[in-house]
Image (cartoon, rainbow, N blue to C red; front, side, top):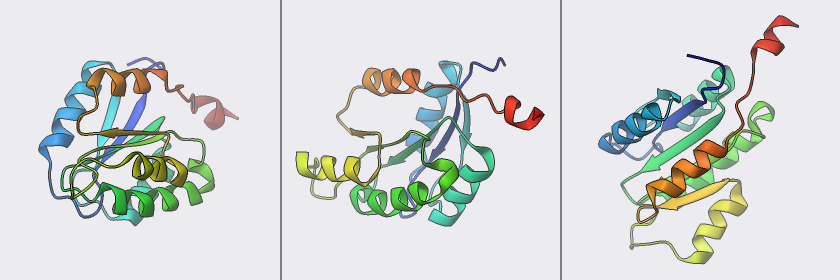
Length: 147
């Protein structure tokens, strides 16, 4: 694997026990040459933040199927953005983000204003998601470690 492959941290939100979405996303991202660290379902915010701080991924992808993405997402992005080392890391959320059906434009804007770089509701195109991931700049941590 060359240094040009992105390191993607993949997770669900803490209230979501679904895993098939994570497996599908891991396969999709891996097929594109990315290295994916899949934390799985029901990931507590503290674990997500500490793992992201220690691994310094190029991007963080949160996927949810249970419909609590708006509520859980606003909370967890605040925790991620509060960590100095993670402020510049692109973070996206996608899936079923609301329990009452698709989110309103205002709710999607709320997620972006809270700190997400992109929001992909469950009717979003996988091509749009992959275009976003492909635009993520790869961080070369070897320079930091050799200094």
